[in-house]
Image: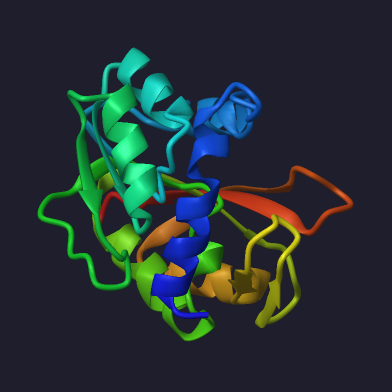
Length: 202
């Protein structure tokens, strides 16, 4: 699926993510763990922010200057309704270029929708956008190697891909980041989340 097709699928799902039916605690404990690695707070961005606003709420409460980015126009519209004071960008992260560095970046359940051949490059770009000692948290498919699939389990056409755990760790290392935590948090589903920190010397 193309990024435009993924955006259309998430346009159709945006209302669900913004409703009370969506589990607003999804990923929150993992983000609180990631925040403990930070020495200071400043700018943060939520990549694939969606419309629930839960990570935006957490980061604002923690004292961050927060921005959000999403490919879905409807997700961004609803996000702006919920948080009119936040800078939301409607953009494809594959094409997006950060204009600043961030102390904290989250890309929860978003990178895995990118075309497989773009994922390592995007992860490296996000690592490059971290400040010294900055922290990134993201989720991925916990496989031994690269893989991709298409399905409609969410009721709309959907695409997931992963460069695999070895590919993730290699990309982090090559990007000057250290993996601080990797966990299968929904085992036996092959869903992993990773917390990585930018090395001080990079």
